[in-house]
Length: 337
Figure 1 (cartoon, rainbow, N blue to C red):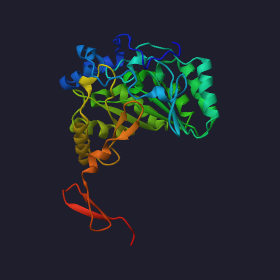
Figure 2: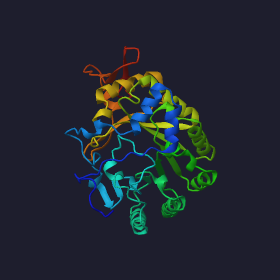
Figure 3: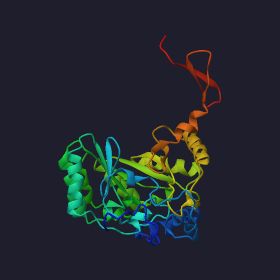
Figure 4: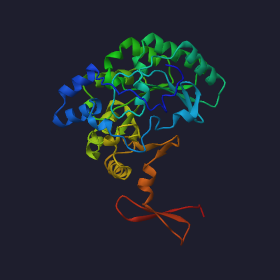
């Protein structure tokens, strides 16, 4: 693949079916509702041929922020490296399906060197997200050679390895692989996990091996119609993740990728689900509900408007008037006078 703009190309190939063996096993082992929820994420559907007006091949507007062909610098202190177009499995709601449909391989040496040079010359960058595609589709030696280049830039550069691997391919996390990851700290693994039925025995063993090696993990979950749009189900997932040593990080609104309308939960309904979760979970288990604003507006916490109607106008004194969980109104002073 050249630098040709996959973000604006309307002649996209059909997103092919790709179901990893470990996930197929989870589907077979799940109960009726869990089986349907897992299969819906990975099996093609005619609904994908229906396109909403707002949908686009680059719903996050990442093309605005490219500083090398595969490095996105949108936020001042962190960058995103798209190291491959290949995935372990094809999630039907994927917001980069226009990229992964082309199955571009791992970064070339020249592309890696361009990223390393940018990091070396941009000290304001404190974190790099290594994503794609899925970095774990690369041969381990290729992946670790790149990660070691990143580590050589600065010892305090935080590396985030964003992957569906613990769910889709837990067998890749061999003792040697985990040991090599642990040697690259500070490094976090950011697993993408959407449903409690994704936490089979092999997946739990993988997560436990990472935790035992001292590798911190923070999950990402996408809110999906017909998959996990239930506060009770999400509460079960997030509690189980915390028990395994994974901090629930984000519950994401499904992005405006082509053919994904059937997966999207309306934001007002999503905010209601998140408020229910807030009543059911502690702060340790509660992720932030967020949306990536279309066209490159960045990440916005939908938890803010979800709570905003609890902050009541007050013109009589210098205090906030906030509605508590019990429905009563409480005051908090705005000054120390």
